[in-house]
Image (cartoon, rainbow, N blue to C red; front, top):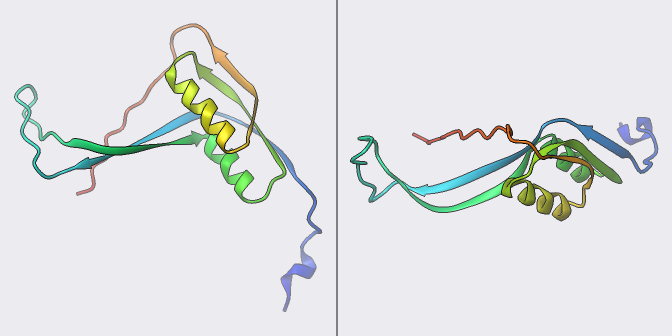
Length: 119
């Protein structure tokens, strides 16, 4: 049975994504050769690389674009900091609309750092 007969004909979709605009930062570490920190008593690791990707609503927008949406616009708030510049360059790279991005001038933008170690 060919299910394509039941699918609607493809028309270019335009999608607006409204939500949290996040930047996901990934750090790759070398677990060998580290030492114990004198200050904390915890194991230290050397960062050997990293990558940056859009998170939150930005991730949803990227997925929509990769699934074939003709136009995807992202709406949300970013801070006036270096992370916002990275987000802007990633939006350009993915060819996502950024006219709906508002830059918050006042302080109070939250930054979360989550440490993830694979055991």
